[in-house]
Image 1 (cartoon, rainbow, N blue to C red):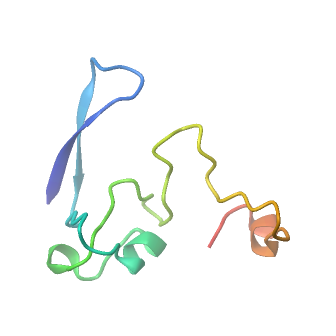
Image 2 (cartoon, rainbow, N blue to C red; image 1 turned 30 degrees about the horizontal axis):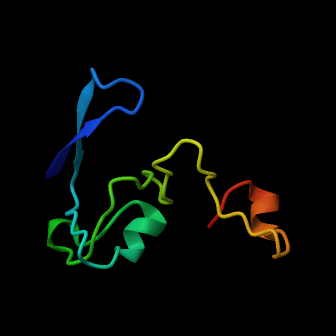
Length: 89
């Protein structure tokens, strides 16, 4: 289990400990399965990075609360999957 101390953005009075069963290796590429599903079948032995800001079902949650959940691409047509399911795959 890998843990790190996380400071709350709203209040510096409260710090919490965030634990993950997956290793964080910032110098390595991100684990594709972990980013997609929120799980990694290799666990602690995985050689890739497992960022702390990944949702449990997959997908990255923004660190900045003002940042949109999905990329905004004004020159591209709307994503049909997103329009139908209101989420990104």
